[in-house]
Length: 420
Ligand code: FES
Ligand SMILES: [Fe+2]
Image (cartoon, rainbow, N blue to C red; front, side, top):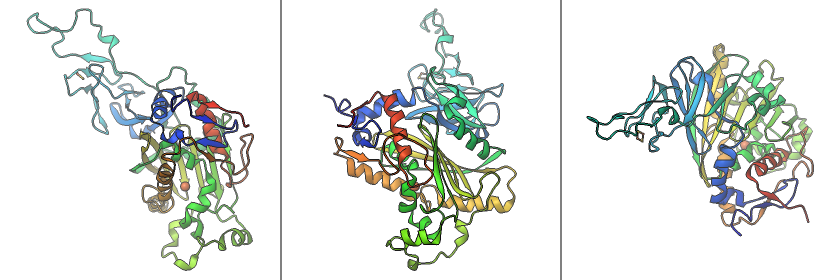
């Protein structure tokens, strides 16, 4: 039996997850075909990053590097970043503007739609050599992607079977996009970090609000997010995407006292915050006091409103035990200066060294270390209940993680053993 065949989920409700999904290189390879090149939409960028004809940026579908480009007619498209001749990486800049793309190796060139338009010495020299007379340039363009966007958020897929993007996102997720991207946005900056862990540990983490009021002690102690606050989780019909939120300052002092003050973590005597404004939240239209609102879209994206910071996060798997996390911070083009300043300031809450997100990368690395030789053992994902996977009126839940695995295992063709 191969390692991959041994990878089974022991219970049909996905409340236990085999650690081999994080450690098995064959599973990682299968993911590239079945997940990232399969019938899903991967988030690749924002329209505002490629506003003009010829604008392009390099992005990823899983480990596959792709190029998102706006053509001469202003339409978005994209292709795998691989020359059709002998496979060279075609575009080497991370972003820019181009009239066409020319490969460095033998200078085959392509238009903005990925059509092969030029082959040096195609007819040889003085009638000698050259490409075969019947070589059909129209059959040798770049490998094209399907690209669609919703509210200026751009997704791509390589599969002809992927449903339309609006259906893939489903109703509750579209409502969040409708709210976050209701006004024209402006990019404020980027950051990226390399994390020595399997990429799915991050997607689990983002579907796990249970940890948020425990692991992130800085925000728990100083009051940006506590499990005792009002909150909840919302999923799409297929339970593959997830939103969770909490309402700032909505908890009762008695609950906080009961559940936090007795723990050693919740110790304000360790120090006082010299700049408490870092956590202050200015409510904005449509947010209804929700200081944190996180939306994970299967398989690779997170859209975040944390206090007044806004960001997208894209997961870029590299190896079975390594991924890059790519952050794009934004605000609204018409932001008043005070809000803009607040967004920039609160960008410090997230990112590689963020006051309330640094730990998420670190715990992934710790899990990877813990399970390195434990592929046959399983995790326990039962907080919030077992059985049916439902929305929850609390952040004390891991249920959306089970939704992730249910959809993932279907795509991957991994088997499920019924509980014994
Ligand atoms: S590999 Fe690109 S032109 Fe030869
Ligand atoms: Fe977290």
